[in-house]
Image (cartoon, rainbow, N blue to C red; front, side, top):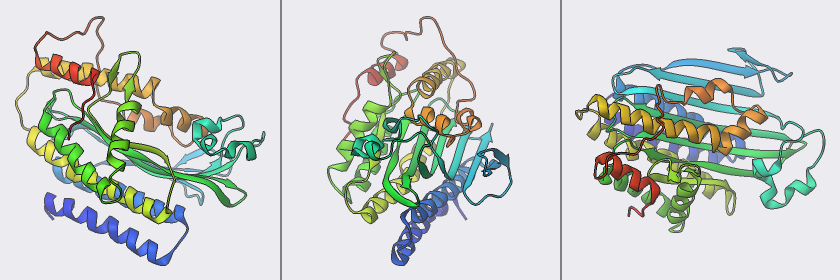
Length: 347
């Protein structure tokens, strides 16, 4: 099977999972889990086909006492990390898939989990904590070539239960680019693919999700965006649940056609050691965002939904910091810094 065959097959297989699941009308969590697991497998296959190197995998399960064990079976939790290091195209790719059910730690803020947005927190406060279920897939891709942007894509489903019944649920996620060197055609392509998918469902989605992405992936202490954006949403639960599931499925499918043509266009460009050094500085900003700004990481670690190994699995392979890292005025690096300080409407 060629790389293009893999890219084309992703949409077919994920859509088939959605259509079959909707026809059978199973529980929402089961449908979402199937979609995200399919995304996990399909995207890994495409990345391996492009790179030529295979992922290494580590699976985890959590026992009834909340202890994570390597490769041991469990009915209520599974966590899979995959890593690709020093590939032919990608310097490092960190991937994880999770399907976990458990209890939020006592004292965990419902504002962190989003439940407070619906007023449900008033009905669910207790010292015991509340049951939850979460599933999702996440990819962070760091290419070798500094002309190829780092990419992040993550989609997830979360629900809070009262006994066994979900009393609050939502979808979240999105996809965005973090370039070390700015090419406007790449930004336009990435945004255009996601806009077309969003417009199939509601023309208001793309401008809302694009703005949300710009606001969320912002590094306040730098006064910069993490990258050139994409789409992002959280606590999405207004409207028909099957329609929202279809939207999330199609957004997940959009990542490969949005990102891989950029990879093919940039992966063989010439670059210098100075370009690699600038790439490491940009990656330093990426690390800063993850450790100081990312709400999902903080909540995930506090709730036990995210393993610390997975956080480091998504970190860049090398990053640098300088006391004064201002680029030369008029340079390509200065152009990128200007774009990051002033988010644009690309379309």
